[in-house]
Image (cartoon, one colour):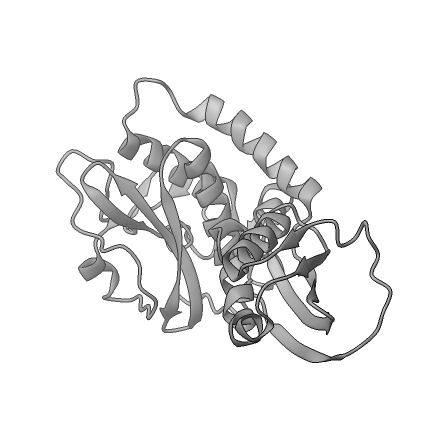
Amino acid sequence: MSRMIVRLGLAAAALTFGLGAEMRFMDAEALARSTSTPSALEQEIAMQVEQRQPVIKLAYTGDRAELSANIAELARRAIEADDYTAYVVDAYFYSVRAWGSTATVTMNVRYRESAEQTRYVDEQVRQTLAAIVTPAMNDSEKVRAIHDWIVLRLAYDENLARYTAYEALTEGKAVCQGYALLNQRMLTEAGIESRIVEGQVDSGSHVWNLVRLEDGWHHVDATWDDPLPDKPGHAGSKYLLRSDAEMRKDHRWEKAYPAAGEAEAGTAAGREDEPAS
């Protein structure tokens, strides 16, 4: 199964950090929000990134040496605080300028999906779940219903040009990132905890999902359950609710994620490609 990805939605940071004596007029409104600790600054950046703010400008009144030592890691953690948001950030650039006892932290962030587009995704997710999920379903059945809807609704973008849940919904095509983002958004709305996993397959970089059920965490790779070339009306289930051991046969990952075990008997897991019911 060759589904090579040439880029992921992870931010590429460029750092310009200056603590020299630079006298400048600080716009009072732009710097209305002030923080005094690295953790508070990280939380504020994360909140504004989730709101899709293109320019974030904050006053920092804490220890400047501590800020200098932690700014790179702080910015990365703020961007990655939410899985969905992390993968719609295309790039970010930050600078720190200081005068007197106050430092000005500025971040310019470029997004693949705008706030308006994310609102569209959320509305479509709510409407879809109302149609495909019933109160009688348990969580594994909800995971299967969401997985099948995505596989049947989308086709893999062999041009490698569509990366977001918005593009997946509006154009019906996406690379693995779009599949995983849409899956994550639908799972979250359905009340199921999930993560986006970043790893490698033989053809290159790849992302998929982890879902948490009552019996623990399990892998779900909707992209690899979607036949290539596309087969309308066909949803595989080989990569639905798989354990780490099963997944590592053809997927690899370096980052630390929750350990995934075997799905309990009676769940919606499948092992062979099969027509969707």
